[in-house]
Image 1 (cartoon, rainbow, N blue to C red):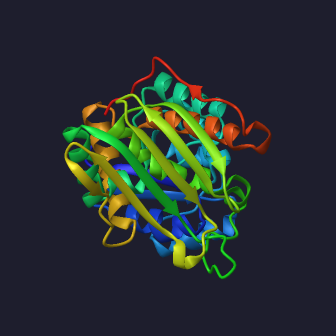
Image 2: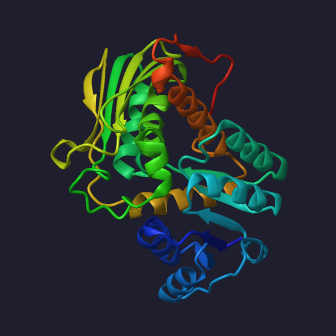
Length: 313
């Protein structure tokens, strides 16, 4: 296979600014077509990128080798199951789902079909961030870590194109930016064997985790921080000293290009990527447990613990 035919599901701001242009420009990819819940938006986006709109997802599945998703997680999960059942490889967005049963059904469908999968975590596929994560995982000896992943999408003065996103309004920063924090902390510190969660202002959630390496970490995530307080910082402390996640020099497009490269590699070699649907399922399991812990009625509950689980680092 010299060129992977990829169909795109989704026509929102994320699809327009990242997915469609990156897929259309990638030398190893043919952007076969675009489907969206608004046909007129699919037609307009397809015209911009020299592709064609499709009236139904299954019609697009029939004409492509892989499917890229830029959809709300509750829409993505069942459509990704159908794509996997059609034998199509999967380039998923995070979170893969916002319920464990949906994430598990998707993982099972991908396994049964034997298709490759990659979940697009921007930090994991950013060149500088990815190299930093790999280097810290190799170094080991980390004692503790803290992540701040705070956006101002829902701040009073926000002009973000994602401020009108219904699923982000409903699920908050825990589900939108929480996956980013976990995608950095888990490969460095190991699986989260226990987690507690406490709600702060607006949609802010503070996570506290104990990892399989013995390290402890905290993460503050949210989408309603004042603009002056928003930002991303991850700090590790251990025997090697103190180190911080490097800042991405540009936007997410180069990271998405590398995610496409990763899918091409997984398809070509048959070897799973570390950020495959199994890792996406684990992130969903941790966030779902944290969401339950963060509910006011459960503020006094103890730790939730998982055992006998591992993923490919």
